Image (cartoon, rainbow, N blue to C red; front, top):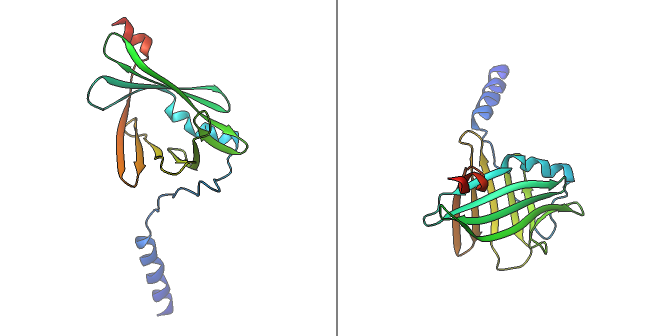
Length: 164
């Protein structure tokens, strides 16, 4: 009887367990990361196009070193690029930051997700989540009064787009 009860408890606990998604840490005391942890973002390397209406919004991600991921954002109307913006995601002093002046700090980094918290109050959080089955990722910008979700799909490099 005792063996059956124990077996039943183990069996029911196995079926009741759910995978809990990781939660971001505290931006005032961000997790410690090594520069090797930045390699978890290799999935984002390449060229991406958003699914936002209007002129195409494109981004190119490339590692310029083992501590820096360069992000080039631009619009493309089919002939010319415009609205160019450049930023970086980089490792510094055991943390991962985004922005020239460390405007965001990584509070969660996994093999398919990056969560960036602002260092200034009132700014939005940024999360990137990769779906390897679909080969696309989603960016979410969030404040208490605002949420914007952007799907990004793989795209040819700008040099190829300009040849058409």
